[in-house]
Amino acid sequence: MNNIEKLIEERHSVRSYLDKDIEKEKIDVLNNLISSINESQHLNIQLITNDSEVFDKFVLHYGRLKNCKNYIALIGKKDKSLEEKVGYYGQMIVLKAQEIGLNTCWVAGTYKKSAVKAKINEDEKLLCIIAVGYGETNGNKRNSKTIDEVNISVEYPKWYENGIRYALLAPTAMNQQKFKFEYLGNDSVKAYSKRGPMTKIDLGIVKYHFELGANKKIDWK
Image (cartoon, rainbow, N blue to C red; front, side):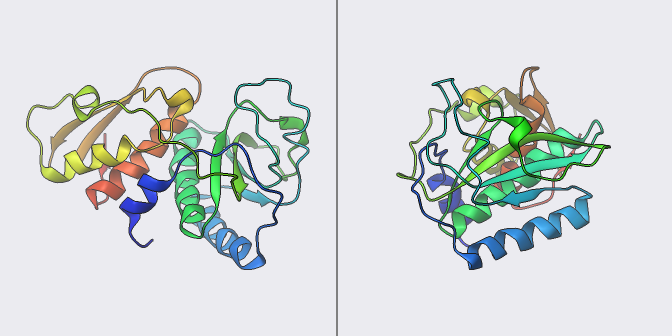
């Protein structure tokens, strides 16, 4: 991705969309990335287009999506690492969508799970979806914790600080940022997360952001 810091800073959750189709070339870009991720990580992520049923008639006002008809279904085989993996690679797709001019929103509860058109095998689980399309706006900047609030180390290298800075720009459920980091030496970092809905998925998302900021693959402990 080009100018990743700018992409991360400009990407915000968008819940209101234009009635505009995603062009075939952009669908192909997303599908190519999804295919590559599925093959390497043994996931079954699927992009579904022109289907608004999953968002129709949802009665909750908070978090409701408007005019969205495209989504990415995050699916994989049931195991203890699935949630983090889906967060990590789902956010990779989110930033690719941002790079090609699309808006996105992670969606956990405000959609009709039974209406998802993706194919889910018996040994697999649908964890959540990502809305994608052309937003009415580019969304709003979120409030964020400080580096000191999520770091528990006293001494650390610059790349570690950069990793945290990028992690603080990551989307998390209800923007609660329930994570902390600890520098263990060399390229090793420990990431902690409080319990709660979506926190393991959030941890995968922030780990991906952290690695982008650190500009290296982290030995996660």
